[in-house]
Structures are given as C-alpha cells and as structure tokens.
Length: 309
Length: 232
Image (cartoon, rainbow over all chains, first blue to last red; front, side, top):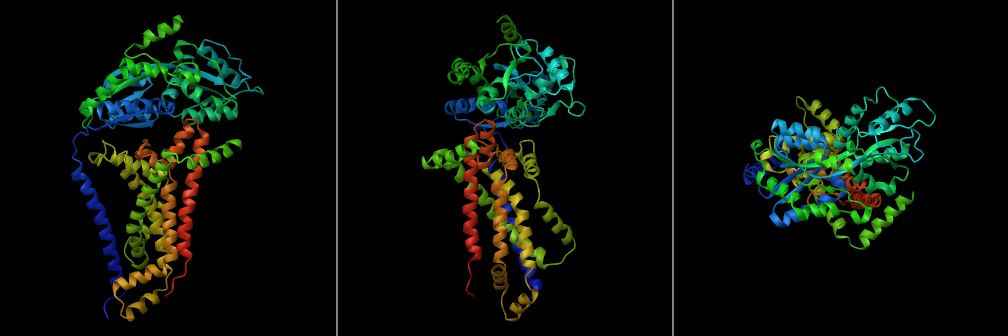
C-alpha cells in the first residue's frame, strides 16, 4: 500500500512543475531561435487610427511588401501612443498628424527624419440647426468662442462640444485651436464640454447622438457621413484647420530598428506614383480627395497655397 | 434596429458566399483561443488540484489571487504582456510582439485564473474519504488522478468553458499585443473594433454574429460532453 493524500499532492505538484518547465523550455527555445538582432524582414509602422480607419494603408502596404519583401506591421493607435512607440524604439517608422509633438521628437533625436506626406483638413461639424450659429464662419477661433459662449449661456438649445479627450493628433489639434481662441475649456468646469476619450468615429457617433459640435478630420467624417446624418460640416476653410500627415524614421541608435526598411518606406511614400495613388484614394466615392499629396513640401508652403485659394 | 437586421443578413451573406476573409479570421480566432485554453488547462488543472488538496503556507493568498485573476480586465493583461514583449521590454529580443504567439500568451493569462478557480472549486468539493478509499484499495497515483478527473468532470468542463469564453471574447489584450494585423493577428473581436471604427456597422454586427454562433457551438459540444452519463 503505497501513497496517500500527500503522495497525490506531490504528484500534482510534479505535474504542474512539469507544465511550468515545458512553458519555460518553450520560451527558451524561442529565445535561441530568434537572435536579438534586427529582423530585416519586418517593418513596424505605428500610425494613427484615423489614417488606418480610412483604409489607405491597406492599399499601399501590399505594394511596398511586394517590392521589398519586407512585411509591414501596421499598428494603429492614438497619435500619443504612436509617438511614444517611436521614442521607445518600439516601432521603425511613424506616420502621424501632430506637427508640434512630432517636432519635439525631432528635437529629442528620437526620429532621424520627418517629412510631410499628405494633408487634408479638419472640420467643425455639428447639428444642422446649429444653435450657436457658426455655420459658414471662416475664422475658427471666432467660431469656437461662439460655441463656448452659447454652450455656457444656459440657453435651452445650448449644444455641447464633444472632445476626443484621448491625446490623439486630433485632440492635440483641438486643444491648440482652443488656446488660439483664448479659451481652455475643461469637462470639470464647463458643462457644455464633454470628453469622449475614444477614437474619431466613436466621438462622431457620440456627437451625432447628442446633437453636439465636434472637431473631426475630414476623412473620418466622410467615411462615416452616411451613419451620422445629424452632423453637418459648419466651419471649414481656415488655414489653421489644415491636417498634416508626416512620416518619421525612428532613430537607428535605439537598437534593433530596421532603419533600412524605414528609409525605404519613406522613399516609397514620396514616390510620384504612390503620391498619385494617395491623391486618388476614394476620390471617386467622395467627390474629393481624402488626402491631398504634398510629399516633401513644407507646411507653411501648403498653408500659403490654401490661404490663396 | 434596421442596422441589426442588416448585420445579420450580412453575416448570412458572407458565410453563404464563403467570404475568404471572414473564414480565415474565424479559423484564426478558433486556433488562437483554443491553443490558449489548452495551455491553460494543462497548467491550470494541476494547479487547481494542488490548491484544493494541499495545505501550505501562502495558499490562502494564492487562492485570493486566483479569484482576483478571474475578474482581471483584459487591458491590464494586454498592457503587461505588451510591456514585456515590446522591443524595449525585457523579452523584446524574442520578436514576438504582434504575433499570434503573443495573443496566445495574453489569452492564456486571462483564461488561466478561470481554469484554476473552477478546478479548485470542483476538486475541493469531492469527499476526501473517496480518495482515501482509493488508496486503501491499492490504486496507484495515476489511477487516483484519473478518478479525480472522472469525478470532477462536470466542474472541469465548466472550467474549459469558462476559460475558452474568457479567451475568445476578450478584445483589449488581443488588440494591444496582436496589433490587429490583417492576415496575421486579426481575430473576430479585433476585426469588430476596426469595422466599427470604419463605420462599417453591418460588417461589425456580422462578425459579432459569427462570434456568438461560434462560442455557442463550442459550448453546445462541451455541454453535451459534460452532461453525458459515464458508465462506471
């Protein structure tokens, strides 16, 4: 008569120890099979949700992949996270739309290059009955002040302003625009100011449901317009509403960065045939370009041109 | 309301047409979540048995951690796994971030507490005298373990279902560590997030329908096994 409850317990302990060992061995196997050098077959592209949601990169990435044999891993996160991934060396190349924050990365030496790829514009959308009366205004600062004043007025038809509130490129843009308007609304103190804390389409859906104003990039607005019939473009055309998309190569000194592929991807985006593809993307569907190609141009030149139009 | 019907119709249409993408996404979802659940069972059932049958210092703390883990938000697990697997993380050299392997690890960590918790509860509910009798009758250790599994099969299958449910339904961790890469790490839940973001609500609902049907089918099979009467 061998054994007893204690023996059974030690058997179970042995089984779980064996399982843990197996898991460890698996990990160790992985460790040795993947040397910690640069994986040259792979490019990690950190980009913004608004750009990825448009579907443009799904068209472009396969072309790059078939030309170079490098597979592109498109990681779609908020601009804040994409820039952070660049600063930590967790991505090889970044494609974002937050000029101020991007310039900080350049100054820190986190990225070795930053080049304009394309642009489009932001629009203030809101309910068709437009209680704050901002429709058709060109001066975005004046329009925002009017929205704030009407929202705070306590009027019966006072409409809220729905902010992304997620540290995304669009959120950063919105804050910059409020600052320029001489205001700093906060959801703590201003009843009319709401922070959604989600992506652009979720914020548009919330604004649509609640009859609120919001700032959106035109691409996401157009893509979603069929489902958000209670939101119409109200303020557009101010040069300050331009939305610049830039490509950045993460600094090779961060270790394990696929600099070669990152440089190739930058060249690829600026190539004339790819620039033309970017300009044509979904143009037939929406009657206008979602992204206007501006490869290698400066932001001020683009703004100058927009002002002249 | 109309959108929901459109979504259900879209789901039927996609399946009827044998849409390659949705089939591929469905199979990947099944593969990743099954692998995670299987690993969770291999590690979790013995662990649950040890916690149920042995008394040792720190056991109470371990049981409490298991119970906490059963309610662990996937984003927490996702962030932890991502921090470890990112290039800047301690295991960044493995190059496993944004791979199905990373998703299996995250889902394993999510379903493990379920498996451990459920097996702990069911094994603990066995009359200890039964085990004593088995020893007395000269059974060896493997026979006793087999008896334990047989006797607790109801609870253990509940552990399988809970573990699988936790793995297949979560989205936060899969998104963070998998990256939702088309053709590589896109599963039903992450594809739903993407299609919702793109405003393709019909497709998103269609994916949701597939997910629910899939989870239902798996649970029907497991329930059938669970409720079957074994002849001893």
